[in-house]
Length: 167
Image 1 (cartoon, rainbow, N blue to C red):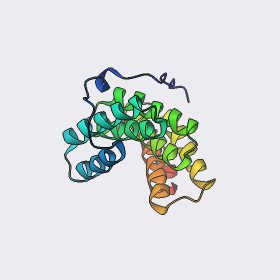
Image 2: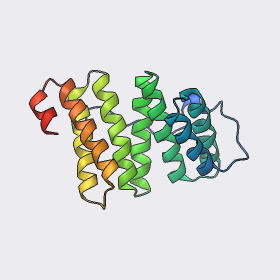
Image 3: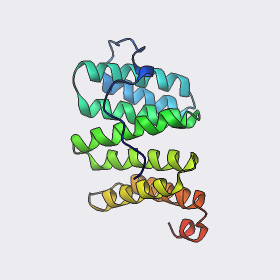
């Protein structure tokens, strides 16, 4: 991918989150519920708290999951550059923690974000990598569908509508 990977460091928008007494994994569950209900602002705050907690505890896997939630939320509110950087950081941490299914999910967010930003070829590449990860692991149907959807979106942005239909 020609989009460079952002070094693993604390993003400026994360530093403002105050540590929470609620465990990070529980915060991430609440984040998912907030996103499902369309409360993106609340989901961002919960994700920031989970990220701060995971970083404080040196829990890279939970940190990656929080970054993924932040990238999804940033994409939804059209903060595409931040979503791209955060998704790339999540991908890198999921590689380190050897979680190919969540790495694929982060790649899907990255693919959609890159495509939306006008980098459709990079979006296609990210989605194809996500699909490859799906095929090499016991993929869940939902995750595989997400990867195919991301690929179709990226192909559409690239102007390859026949490939988008086939994806």
